[in-house]
Image 1 (tube, rainbow, N blue to C red):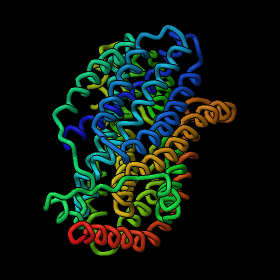
Image 2: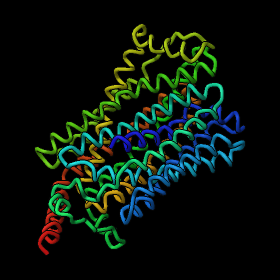
Image 3: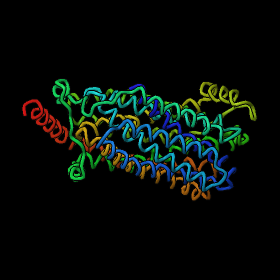
Image 4: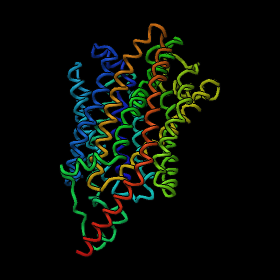
Length: 455
């Protein structure tokens, strides 16, 4: 479990490297900043599409080699990114990395779901999801700090880490499919095996399951909102530049503020615990926790985007000096403290979505279907995140007329958070269908276990 949590975080470090460096990479490759943002949007989509093929293959066979292959691919793509001297080469390298990331996300979910008992799925999935969020934050930090002088350095560093991560898979054992499901414990303990595998004839059954439909569709609207948040470093960078700071200093300021303001994501553990506890009382529990979380977060996002920030940092100083000054402003500047509080509450509430979404997919699907269903949800997430990440740049430019920077970034980000409203509604609908779907899965697993023990 520790290996998979760490590797999930590393994959998201790769995702988080590029956004803080949009300006520098664009200047080096002689393309607009929005063109680099477009690459990020496309890679989200490519990774999600690739994940479907990886997951279906993993649900049919041995998953460990697929995870190693995927990790090597994203490491190769990261190396290619660092070595690219033109926009086309940069684009191709990022796409290669995205294909590898699709394997680690979807096949990794299938493996992790087989390690966790249903009673603790929310908690452990929160750790798995949190590691991905931590990885994204680490990528933002590494990109903003290491890339301050040379934007290629973070990618070269991560390439080495990716190669080490591939070796780490050698020390994990092959997890047996279905080993976490209570109904199958007797079969596996007696030396039997759960040998059911997904086939094309199972796809209509998966798609007809109503809870699956809501869990997949909510990802489109949720990730439009989440995808826009990768521009947080740009918003805070623009605010710093508006106060007269140089680009290099503003990049560090924007990266540090973006990291501070996403610390609330660490409270996804609370969302997972609450989901586990409520799920033991009612089979609607997990979906209700997610619905309330995403809807209640909206006012706090608006506070985060519109409260003005005033920072006092030494322009042109070392990254360490700028970081210390930014951290000190949390105490010395009331608006910074208020923004940080709003951000922590907003991210804490929306992060309840992640562990309960992971756990619900495992709850309402058979072991041999979970990776594929996760990948379908991830595909919807990729479509939404690509739309959010790509469209928000267009919206920012369109808003520059009536709202000069950095206000155009604040208005655009606030508008994109309204996509959380249909997300909350779909989680509420999932709470109505999940009890029946969970019961059907339990009944089928019990019947299969009975046939295996008493043929």
